[in-house]
Image 1 (cartoon, rainbow, N blue to C red):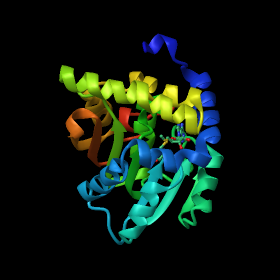
Image 2 (cartoon, rainbow, N blue to C red; image 1 turned 120 degrees about the horizontal axis):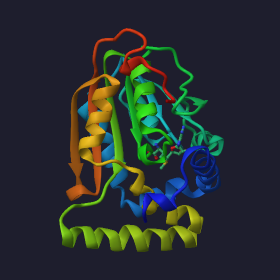
Image 3 (cartoon, protein in one colour; image 1 turned 180 degrees about the vertical axis):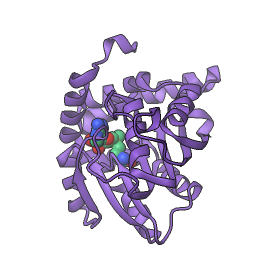
Length: 247
Ligand SMILES: C[S@@+](CC[C@H](N)C(=O)[O-])C[C@H]1O[C@@H](n2cnc3c(N)ncnc32)[C@H](O)[C@@H]1O
C-alpha cells in the first residue's frame, strides 16, 4: 500500500492508539503464533547487542504488554515502560509483570533528560507520527554514552524471498488476525511497513539525533532489523540533537 492511503499526523496517532487498545487482550498470543516465537529471540538479541545488565536503567519505549521489559528485568536491569495505549499496559499487569509503567507518548516522554542508560523499542517505529521527533526525544532521555536497541519488521530485498514473505505477511497474517482478533488492525500491520524509511534514512535520523556507532543488523534475510547506537556527548540546547521533539 502507498503511504498516500495511510493516515498521518494526529489522525494516525488516534487510530494507532485506538487499534492497540482494541487488540490488547489477544496481542501476546497472536504475536507468538504469527512470529513463530522469533519475536522473543530478536528481543533477546537486541538486549545482548547493547549489553543490558544489572545497574542499567532501561526505558522500553512503546512497551505494549511488556515483553522487552520482562526480558530486561530478567537480566537484572531496572525498567520503566512507556506506552500510550492504556489497555496494552493493563495487559502487562494481567500477565503479572511488575515493571514500572507510565502512559505517555513517544514524542513527549515523561522522563528527565539524560536519565536512562538504555532505550529499547520493539516493533513500534512504524507506528510513530514523527520518527525524527521520536529519535530526538529518545536522544534527550538517554545519558551520554547510553545505548539504544530498536527492533522493527522489514521486507526482504531478494525477489523470491520478498514474494514468499509477502504471501505470509500480507495474506496469512491478516487472515489469522482477522479470525482471532481484529480484521482492520491485522490488515494495517503489513500496510504500516510503508511508513518505515529505508536503511540509509534510518541511520541518518539516528545520527542527526545525536547517536554514534549506528549499526543496523538484518534478521531472517531481511524480515526484521535491529538498530543500535550510542548516545554521543550532549550538544548545546537549540542544535539539532537537542531541539524540540515534535518538530
Ligand atoms: C506492535 S506494538 C509493540 C509492543 C511491544 N513493544 C512489543 O515488542 O511487543 C506497538 C506499540 O507501540 C505503541 N505506540 C505506538 N505509537 C506510540 C506513541 N506515539 N507513543 C507511545 N506508544 C506508542 C502501541 O500502543 C503499541 O503498544
